Amino acid sequence: MEHPKDIGDRSTLAIIAALRELGYGIYLPFGENTRCDLILESMRGLTRVQCKTGRLRLGSIIFAVCSCYGHHRNPATARRTYEGQIDFFAVYCAETTGVYLIPIADVQTRTSAYLRVDPPRNNQHRHIRFAADYEIGRIAIEGLRVSSGA
Image (cartoon, rainbow, N blue to C red):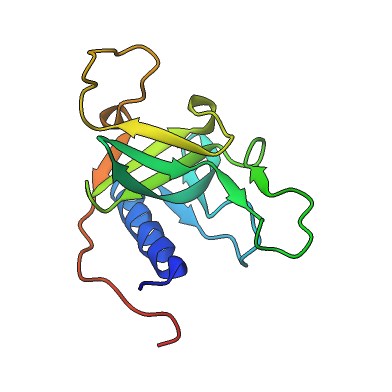
């Protein structure tokens, strides 16, 4: 079984590749305990980004929008949102090879968010986030699997 850190690193790598292709300057915060994974530089200034791995489930890409601290000894809270700490979520989904850039204001930040890939069966379009509206690139990184501690 692949280590979750390796999966996250692969997603971050795909996200960085897509953002560089768009011409962003990219800064990497130092250390594991920072609240954002990337800082983007553009003509408008600096933007904080949290990278996430998305998984295709039932026609939608699902991704976490908060961090989980339940595994820590005596956590003050089991979940922590990124409100006020980031500007965007960047999501990579290996099943679609898509990279998506979602403003934090576009999602509820309680547990997880969805980006719809397949059209809804009931033809509903209001209040649905379609993945195509947030896609910034496609990156195929198959075969890039390493085990932790190698």
